[in-house]
Length: 161
Image (cartoon, helix red, strand yellow):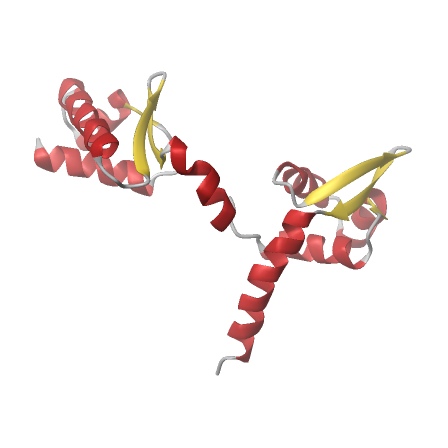
């Protein structure tokens, strides 16, 4: 059981997806009951542990997450994910031209920007203000904080030999 428990733990750790016990059983070639027992033990271990990590079950799905009591603290230090070069480019244009129309940005960078902007709004880096059939785009305080932290880091990396 110990080996199965560690294998299941590793799968949950490395996977961004949620897993059903049945799928974990197929992946590990073990019985569903054995996988469910391993999952129950892992949940208990992580709940007792001082670690910020927890294994949670939501409906039939299991995943590895941050314990609820640490989520707000982690948000202060870690962004959902670092910005891609494409995200950074779009944010750079919006920061350089506050209030740029989304349609104008699309003409400059291409129509692929629409879902990216939607995601940047959702993540809190950009605000949209409707204007006619388009919207004016502005960077947020979150973007300014992000650029302070990561902008300095990137500059230092470029200056390092």
